[in-house]
Amino acid sequence: MIDHKVRVHRSEENPAREDQLAWKIAEVATRPVGPPADVTDMVINRVIDNAGVALASIGRAPVLAARAQALRHPAPGGRAGATLFGCAGSVRVSPEWAAWANGVAVRELDFHDTYLAADYSHPGDNIPPLLAAAQHTGADGATLTRAIAVAYEIQVALVTGICLHAHRIDHIAHLGPSAAAGIGALLGLPTEVTFQAIGQALHTTTATRQSRKGEISSWKAYAPAFAGKIAIEAVDRAMLGQGAPAPIYEGEDGVIAWLLDGPDAGYTVSLPEAGEPCRGILATYTKEHSAEYQSQALIDLARRLGPRIAGRAVTSIVIHTSHHTHQVIGSGSGDPQKYNPSASRETLDHSIPYIFAVALLDGQFHHDRSYPPVRAVDETTTALWHAISTVEDPEWTRRYHSTDPGEKAFGGRVVVEFADGSTITDEIAMADAHPLGARPFGREQYVAKFRGLADGVVEAAEQDRFLAAAQRLPELSAEELGELTLAVPNGQRPLATRGLF
Image (cartoon, rainbow, N blue to C red; front, side, top):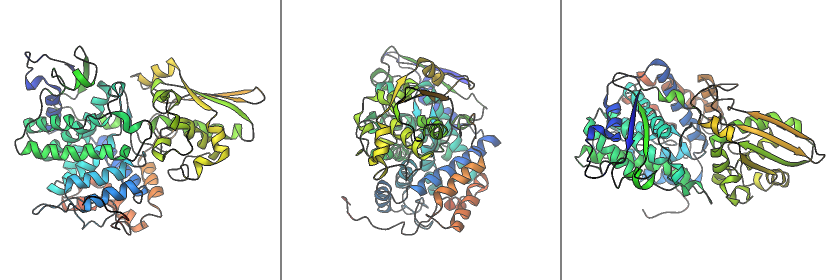
């Protein structure tokens, strides 16, 4: 790996393109280096994971609305178009709209993969735009596999090196460039074209984090899908010879100077050197539970603690955890909505007091049964929920940011106090499903998660067909990439209301 130093340049300094971060990213995308076997296996796992969580959300209102919009944009003449989750493989739409609809389906339940470092991310959000572009342009499975590995590499590098959330910039600002880089790799574009696409994608995906704070709405699912759609459009414009603002990261009026740490800031972004394969996907991890990733380990701890507190009167539960967990999904956020029984699902999947209470009481956390409208107004749930708070613990913050896999942690220590004055203390560092957890996810677990989410949504034969295709991803022909979708009965049903179009 090469550590690239990134800083703001005054306009008169005018750094050469080859010295700009967007160019360095484009170089990684345009090098013809294939993924090693373990990376290929993980790409397949994440394609399966995305499909499962998309199926579980297929009938939810935001997904139906996004699919309805996509269906109004059929594939342009002379190109194959891209498939939509929920529709038959013969239904093809323009790729940017397939990325939009499929991206919303994948993201809606907050149930696919994650990578946490200096910033937050869901790297699987790269897959919908890359798959749509591949189906539309006639790429094969091997090319798509490499492109996905590239997109993950760029996402991991940016999330590791550049913090967005401290300045309340949403993490899709790292997704636009990674998706554009992945599409550049997919299409074998020149470095110059990919560089311009990356710059455009970043410039148009810098948004605030209000989408994940306060009254969280369906835009939380739409925002990453929007970034994927924008990345496809940026690549299209760049291929037509249109340029981007530059230097997009380092410019005097660029992203770092005005949206991030300011004109005196400096960052280090590590990228593969020439000839080195992209392995970043192996640093990422999926979710066993449908909630924000920083709740995953704490859900597992709640399942373990549940039998020990059953039937006892709880006075308080304090979760000692990292700054990120306390500030983003804990009481340190200052969001009263995190304790509101009338809050949206999107709000409650970012409320560790709510999530921990339900997991304690139920011994599990389910993508449907653990959420409103019924669960959040249950009196027993509400009483326990409102007894839970979080505090930042400097040691857990240190472990959260540690680069040592043996120390890095996304959990916390929980202190339960009972009415009789006694207490129970327990802690957990990693989610059970994490690669270093008690029950790491492998192919068997990814397939089981997919089956569990697909059962009752599509027939077993349709599940089998998809899984057979997905597990052959590097061998699929361009025509066979169309098999990477799942048809659901009434997948094209009209909405009860109509929008502008």
